[in-house]
Length: 196
Image (cartoon, rainbow, N blue to C red; front, side, top):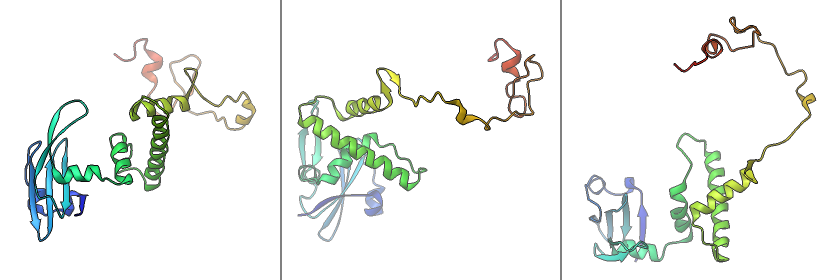
């Protein structure tokens, strides 16, 4: 017997376009392979060579009971390490389609590193869930004693020669501060309550 998850475009269109409500299953057989669509929090597509469409009741950690197919239960029991990692990371995935591939790769590797740290933390008796652990890691990397960590460089000599005067100034201010092109800061300089 072999069972695997599948992308929606890997299953027949008749199955992909079938509407099922939460807890229901639709199936389509092609020879020995059975394609299934199961609706839970979102649509789950499975390809399997066994178990048919039989369903079982499972209890979630919160005590709620739900009905799932036998193939999904078998898949969850024998899920490989990569799928388990993806399942843990997926709710916190920060990558977007517009991000370049190497940025996605870097973010994914950081997620894997945090997940490995969380696994060791839990193995040593830690109680925080993955989300709280990730927040703590970020806070410890960014903040020190409640204050954001920044590079403190008192040497302003490195900026010598980089300052340029602008030709654009606020015409109404007595000190004529430099502004960007146009009148974008004129309201800010001329009104006490500039957001009205």
